[in-house]
Image (tube, rainbow, N blue to C red; front, side, top):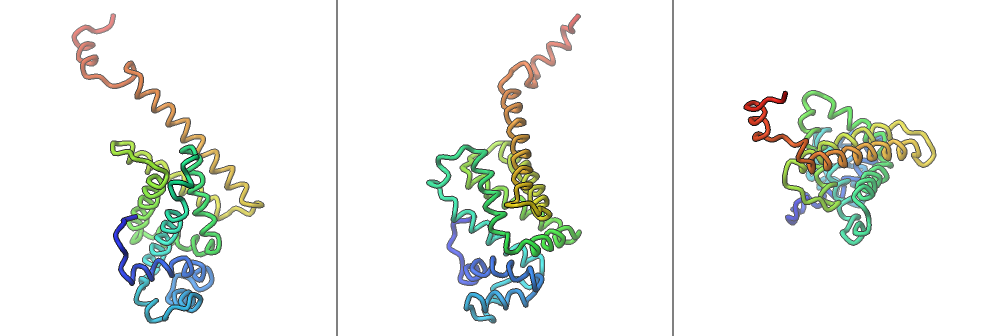
Length: 219
């Protein structure tokens, strides 16, 4: 997330975000959830209504901003320093699920809101934003095409894990944990293959070799 100092309304929106999500599990993504959150936190309801978006998609977006902020605040560099990359990504995803647990049904509704055609573009931007933040929190500094491929892959892993979690009735979400581990194992196998492919000159595209074969075709 940007390091700019938030405005008072932005700060209030972040303060309310998680509580609004929890109340949206009962009240829906409506002004009633915002007022309930304000009462819960001792915030002036008028200020809360002013700070929080009025439409359902905007409310869900603000809630996910709150999840992002909580994750970023929790995973300090010192906390993740000893973890391997795979462990960092797993911990980040699992933290998000635990943080969203009180708003589980509201999260389900939020996904259905972003499935609407008019909200699809916003949903895609939010998914990218969260994936980007997860990678940056994990210490990723990629600037080449890997920046995009990593975030696209993580968007898929996180999105599918989120769907599995929403329907998981197992003890301690053990089914979701196993699903997440399988997905991450698949990604790591792909990354190893990709690294080997990039490091092998015989497999990398070469214009010189291509032109040479045109001139001296193999017999």
